[in-house]
Picture 1 (cartoon, rainbow, N blue to C red):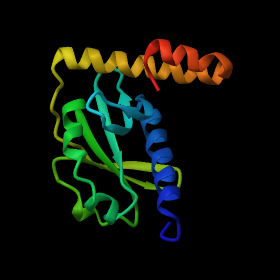
Picture 2: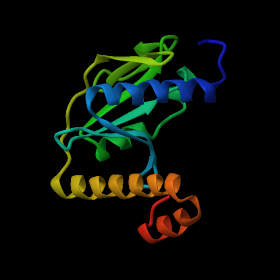
Picture 3: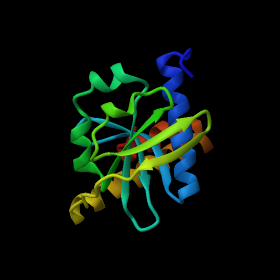
Picture 4: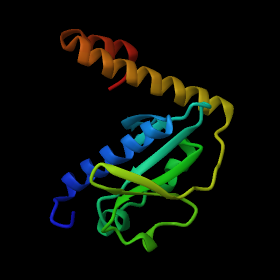
Length: 156
């Protein structure tokens, strides 16, 4: 994968991480805007209502230039980094989980520390997740009416 551009590497890692979520019974939603103004690469809703954030990194430079990832802990129960096989894993913080991807496959190599969300934030974030997912699905089903619905739901 070393010959891939950074955007293509990111797309492949996102795709593989989302497929892993599906195999685990988690429902992944990509590029989720947060009330803080940040955007999660993947927010996965687990069967028990847990919320897992997955931050995708395309390479060492991407990680080293990113100072915002610690803020994501406030918006999830568990935080993972998803990287490809070429990524220097020693750069990643030990308290975060680690997902390693190769083409369309991904595996969890390290579980993260858990930090459960307060109930009010969990409810608000779960509702945001549901509204965003519904707006995106409606956009696929009715592209002409989707922008009106997204505006009414106040989602992207």
